[in-house]
Length: 253
Length: 257
Image (tube, rainbow over all chains, first blue to last red; front, side, top):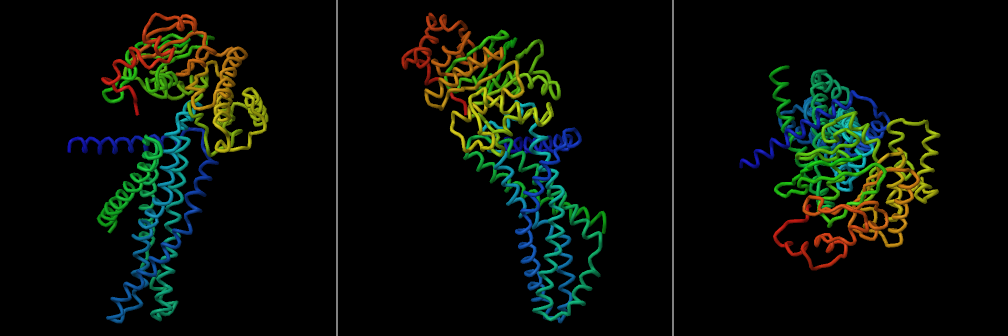
């Protein structure tokens, strides 16, 4: 038990130091514009299809499930409000973050981990290049920009999914559906969703890169590190979601 | 001059470097020999500041590598060229981008000069017209030579080699040995080379140091090492299965992870 506690603190300390060094590295030249753009494409643009699919189906399922309840009291038109609010406040940010963790976080850990075990990170250092600034900072910035953007896409597509169910299955008129959506969603709801996405992006970037750097033991080690990165990111995202929802609930009621 | 003074490093309870002392003179080729896993690579990584010791000093021309950090350490590293055991080429980049990495990274020269340097360094190691290939498309011997070219690109004063002849065929190994010798003579660099290949050690060394149980137990010219009276060194350089090295084997954990 004592040993586990120590390991926990070692992990918390290690990731915090990495996060601090990464942020510090952002303000020191050279600025890696090309690398950031490259990562933004890999992380953001290439993730769009899977994020879109997840958003669409989630919106549709949400529509169907709420309809199941609301039909009994004849309040079908309210599904638009429920789908819209749930997507923007909760499901958009969380599902996008989880999908991106599986797709991008795992890839980051595998790539950096392989570089670690094949001494490429030592080689970077031997060529007088700071690996945190070269490898971590561009991924961190790319995630910080792209995850909120992907979340916005996911929100819109999820609402469209609910619209398909509401309009074509339940017969709500299109104008009523859209008005019921816009009426309930406030700027505050969208902003809290985006703040969450920002927090999640930092979790994914830090955990994935940390696991990559800590990799040892060849191909098996890379596999283990990748699994750990995904598992720890998942848990931390869900926990951070709960915590931030609670904070928003009490601070901005 | 590189002075390594009382260097100690332990992984867990296993002391890999145990009060190690060694001096490398400017302009010589120092070959450090020792068994696989005895900590030779760990020693090299301390010289470059890639690892931090538990105690002790590594002094390169008056500066203690173990104490400096940040820009000062980076500046010192620009004087070194390190050739890694598995070449450690960046596999996301082409050969040309690998060789020119440090030049572009530190914006040392305009692009035209960088390209000229890349071609020059590749031809120094006997390779041409492979700039646009990826490291995965190269053979083991070619990768090692690209690794050497990458280390040469910044014109270092000190070249560090980690087992340059391990894992390649004897003919290619001799090509590498000749290359190390020519580079040493033509570029007047100090060379520190770590190996367990005695053929290579005798060919390139001006001095040989034998590392055993975390210390340097003997230093001398290749002739002195060859005719040594030390039983441990004798067993190693002759490659005998019976002797003092293997006698106490079962008691010790020699191999590190």
